[in-house]
Amino acid sequence: MSLAYDDIKTHICSLIGGGRLAANEKLPSERELAEHLQLTRITLRDGLNRLEGEGLIYRQNRRGWFVAPQRFVMKPAHKVDFNRMAEEQGFHPSTRVLQLRRQQQRREIYQAFGQEKSSRFYALRRVRSLDGRAVMVEDSFLPIERFCGVEELDLSGSVTAQLHARYGVSVSREQCNIQMGHLEECYAEPLGIHAGALGLKILRLRYDTQERLIDYNVEHWLPHAIEMEVATR
Image (tube, rainbow, N blue to C red; front, side, top):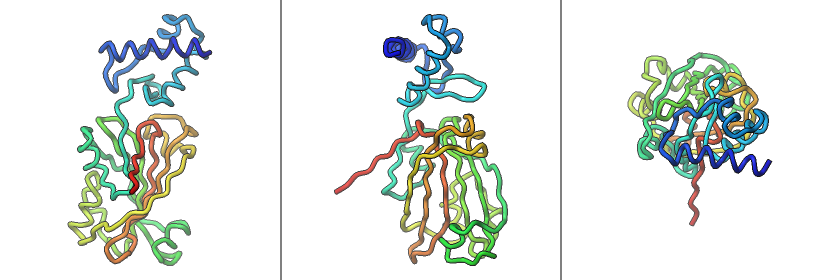
C-alpha cells in the first residue's frame, strides 16, 4: 500500500505542480485515475482519502475530487471576524442564511445567558464559504429579549457589525472550545459531504464590555479547510 500511495501522491502532485489543475479544480474521475495508475478503486480511494487528510485534495458528494486551496488560518486566541480574516488572507468570503427561527433552547444555551427555560431565542443557521466553497455551517443563538428585530437585519453579512450598528453592542472578548466530532446530516449536507464524516466543532461565546454574553455560536468546519495558529508569550 505504501508504494501505491506514493504513486497516487506523485501523480496528483504532478497534476497540480505542472499547472494542469488549480485550486478548486476537479481531478480526473476515480475510474480514470485507477486505470492510469493500474490500481483497484479500493486502493485508489484509500490513497485519495489519505491525501484529503493531508489537505492536498477534498471530495464533494456526487461531484468528485478537487484540488484543495490554502487553509483558512484561525487565531482562536483573538476576536474572530470571519469576513475580515478571510479577506486579509486573500479569500472571497460569502454567507448564505439557511434558517432563522424563534424558539426555546436547550439547557446549556439558556443557562449560558442566565435565562429561564421559558426564554425564547433567535436560532440562526448560516453556511459560510470561501471562494465559493462551503467550509463551515454556523448556528448562532441570540436572546430575543435583547435583540428584538434581528430578522430585519441583513444576516448574509457580518452579524458582528449589524449588532454594533443596530444595538450598540461590541465584542470585548471571546471564549472558544474546539473539538473533533462527526457531522450530523444537517451540517454535512450544506458542506457537500456525507453525514457522519469528521468535522471540527468550535463553540464560541462572545461577551460585551460589561461581560454579558452576546451570542452563543457553534461552528461546524470541514476539518481540512482550517488550521489553528496560537501565539504564546
